[in-house]
Structure formats: C-alpha cells, structure tokens
Length: 178
Image (tube, rainbow, N blue to C red; front, top):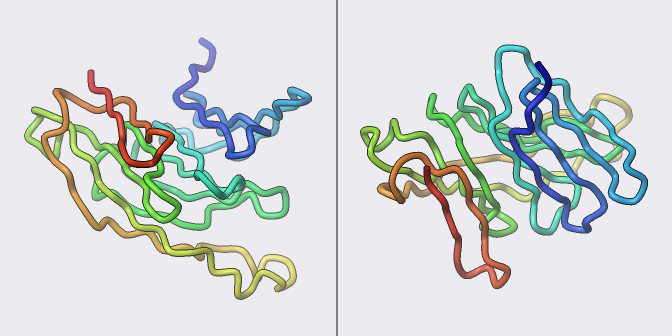
C-alpha cells in the first residue's frame, strides 16, 4: 500500500505545489527544483480531506480534516504552523475554495441535508494579527486568525460536493457533486 493524493493546490505565485496524502501528510513541492518538504506529518487517525490555497497570500492555505476541523496554515519558512482553526460541528468537509481574501467556502457531507444533497458553509476569516510578529522564539506562535461560519447554503447538487473552484473573475463558483 502506497499513499494516495487526497488534495492538491498551488500557491498564488505558482512557486510551489501543496499535496495532501492519504498518510495524513502535507507536502510542499518547489516547482523550479522539484524539492519536496514535509509541512505537517498529520495524525494517524485523522485524514486530510482537501486543501485550498489563499488567493493573495502565498503562505496561507486551508486544510480540512476528516474529523470536521478546518485549519488555516502559515507555511512560510519562518512559521510553518496552524494560525486558525474551526470545528465544523462534526460535519465532514469534502471540498474547499477561497471565495475572496476574507472568505472560505467549505462543502460538507450530506449529513446537513438529510443525505440528499450537498451543502456549503461560508467561513469568514479575520485579517492576520501580526502584533507580536517581532516577538522572540515561540512567543509569536499560535492561533492568530479568527474563523467563523457566517452562511449556510443547502441543497447544492445531488450527493456530496467533491470539487469547488472560483472563476477567475471572482463572480461565480463552480461545484461538482458525485
């Protein structure tokens, strides 16, 4: 048994590809050299279900876990840590995309619609709080971006949503279901 890719995203500059593996690891691959770096090794009992790169912050990615938690990561070489976290109330994320700089769309399993169709949660993100960015060592580590569900869109497609993308003009989102 090898690893299966469960999600992929590229940063806004196209400098790196982020890959989620069924082994729960998140790997960053440099597009110019092909060098690979492990961002996080994950937890054995929790799978990574999907990943989304922030549209304007090349070091920010959202990662959804099989336990219903969405984590916001700072993957810059100086931090490489979780900077925001949101519990989706035991609803399992199946796809994600950033709607804007401050909003993330997260599709969840069919448990929210009685098993009939997909649902999307719109999550608002606070701006980065860099007030202690110059603090030495671990004092600057920790969650510093708030995440809050602000809208719920129900009855999207048939079955679970597996893919979501924003159109380049930022006006429309495409979603695919099973």
